[in-house]
Length: 355
Image (tube, rainbow, N blue to C red; front, side, top):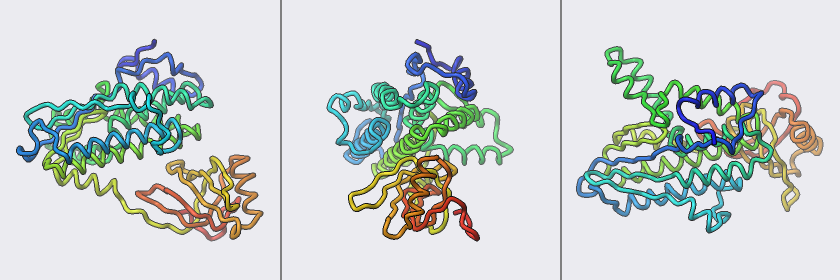
């Protein structure tokens, strides 16, 4: 087994970036990169003193439930927990340990990550070993909260840059990342390479986006429940280190819980799959031309011309060409979640602006 550690991770990332060589996914031992997750809650001493009140218990239950859904997205391409088999549920358990003094919760996620690796391998037959490796590393970073707290870390980094009086020691402390000891700037480059590799495979890209979204929801939920349980400060350690006061925690929840808005207009889209529904219409799995959104699009064949359906099926799906959809798009935080098409064309409609 090839051991992944800080000394040879650079070589693996370089191999992923080259795209003309292939890694053997099953020959790599990723365990040294599995995040050690810790959530330390400081606040009301009557409620947070090495104990778990019912509010925190609910938060931890929901936290685990969201990660079960994330696993289902990788394994079954759905967040329906009915897909989970009993032996899978046993392997995907989180074990929580609570240290006294405050409420310092340690989350044992090794078995979960091991099962996730098996899931990635079992459902990615059309992927190269390099793409599987990239997808799994993105999933591990998601489990460790890297993407959930990324906006917070970027803001902290910007604030540090603006603070000319900040000492080098303080800057170093803020940039620390516990996942294999990788500093933040280096981690950013690593993630950029991983995501670029995944984008070249529709299956990997779609599931990575959905997995990250589900993991973000898990962390948003545990932060929200921690505040409700009486925490005035939340310290997180996993794939990144974060310290949130009450205002920062509320800001994170607000930003992650952006409202769903309707945008009407034209978008360039790629078509991943098409399914006829029982009523004779089409359910389409699509992604925006930029690749940042994967969503379901409904096409009512009683309103869309047959020639436009041909463009959708033959050019969009068959030839994998970019097509242009005029319709109603449900967008949250810049990401399209679902859409209803009103017209479809091969070329961008004259006078239209891409939204």
